[in-house]
Image 1 (spheres, rainbow, N blue to C red):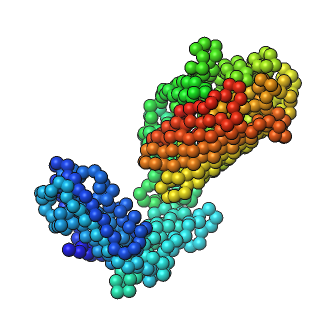
Image 2 (cartoon, rainbow, N blue to C red; image 1 turned 180 degrees about the horizontal axis):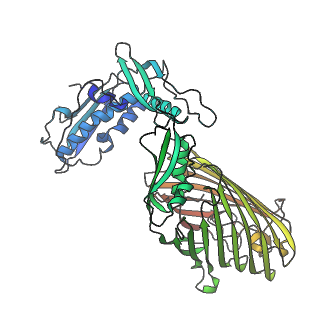
Image 3 (tube, helix red, strand yellow; image 1 turned 180 degrees about the vertical axis):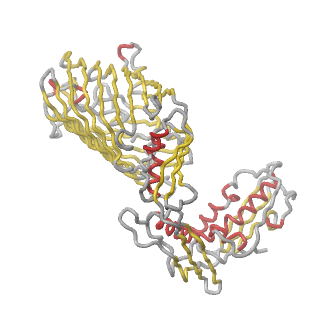
Amino acid sequence: MAIAPLPAYGFELFGLRLFGKDKQETVDTIGTPQDFEVEFTVVGENDELSRELKKASTLWKDRDEPASGAGGLIAKARGDYRRILNELYANARYGGTISITINGQQASEILPDSEFPNPVQVMVRIDPGPEFVFSTARVENEAPPAGPGDEVEVADGFARGLPARSGAIIKAGRLAAEAWQQQGYAKARVAERRVVAAHDADTIDATIVLEPGRYARLGGVSVRGTERMNARFVARHTGLKPGEEYDPDDIELARERINRLGVFRSARVETAEEIGEDGILPVNVIVQERLPRRFGVGGSYSTVDGLGLEAYWLHRNLFGRAESLRVEGKVSGIGESIDPEDFTYRLGGTFTRPGIYLPETDFVASLYGEREVLDAYTRTGVSGEVGVTHRFTPDLSGRLFANGGWARFEDDFGTREFVTAGLLGAVTYDTRDNPADATEGIFAEVTLEPYYEFNYGNAALRMIAEARAYYSFDEEDRFVIAGRAKIGALLDPPALKTPPDKLFFAGGGGSVRGYAYRNIGVRDGENLRGGHSLAEASAELRVRITDTIGAVAFADAGYVGAEAFPDFSEDLKVGVGAGLRYLTALGPIRLDAAVPLDPETDDPDFAFYVGIGQAF
């Protein structure tokens, strides 16, 4: 028996019912597990359409798992009628037929208490029918042409002669309403969608009617749900000003600002249901606060650098305006030696005051004490910085800090002390879709650090530029190529009169994998020191094997030169390797194995790295 395209269900996609009645069916989905085998047939030779229809079918997706009894199998099958039909409409197929049989009977006619053999044969047969095209595709009562900043993308696919995909109709209505909203008509909506199918001509006549409503300006911002937070601060931090024209982009930006405070478990920024007679639209912020204190621990491990452990304590709302204080400690190098004097230690804290002057400007101050034990040097010192960060756009940010510190170094030059003071400025552009596991976008950052060293009386300038790019080869992001490049230069004091941690080194998990941490530098026989120039590059091919397991092949390269403008007299160091990824909601858990192609003294034959998040 061939099932017609169930019109009573179909045009529900468009927000109205042309004919037919709702039908609600209840089946018992609890019972003995019911095994089933699925034969899925799509008439015609359209592999892409066949793949999309299979993705829409729960019978096909769950074919390797038993259903929860005969009733559960019947429920899956009946639900598939609508899911497959909606997918047909999404592909402009309005004259198709769907047949789903269980044990030779149409699923729509089987009684809920039926019993089947185990396993039972399920057959899905779909005749998509012809592709329909738009004979008419128009929008009535469109918004007038928009000014700068209020433009809305064109509804591609909604035009006469193009395939009449249901998604194109829905998208065209959404964008048409958004065009009015961008110009201050907050309650603009689609009042009607008139969709008529002509089966004799395989065409669709679609008309979308807009109702813009009234023009609106923002009213006052009210805040509900605050306990320890200052409600007036929350309202100001939205950046919304009474009297300004309503703009949905401003409402979304306000929501992002509130969420970035990190104080709230949930936060909503909503406009009132109705626009006042005076054209004023009040704004409501509804929040739920997190507990103010948090404690966390973490760790990392590599066969080269040993075990690292860290812990932090965080108070995220000290004085009621989302001021945060983070105190953290870290010890690393465990395993390379059992002598505590050979470990690296770091202890300190960072204070952040968000929303000074402008909602996008934060004040930050930090102070840290550190003992760092490396092959090239041992450093004991204290450093601090104070300054501001600012977010210019969602993609562009910057920071400017005054910094300084004291440090004592023990290296091949002997024991020396340095006192420095200077500035650090940086600009960052970031369009990555997910910083912990990017599949598209770019990251670029330029950092300038002029400073003065008092003991030797030298002025210097340290410059770093880094770029990362990501490209996915498929819509499911199963194949991603990632690349990273970094260059640096230090002007101009000689190495003897420069704090070693200002010089450049390479090597290790975040640099050139396979080599010991910071073991790529300028060689003078067996001695190693930092250089005045740096060049690094990395490439990765990331493959997602299953929904939770991924694999990576990579190559890293690094060069450190003695001069700020390198003459490439030093060797280029290359490491290659592969790794596994276990994908979690917090980011991938990373396990990499790397081999140095040109190892030096203290470099291993191979190295393993474990961490959270992609390498870059």
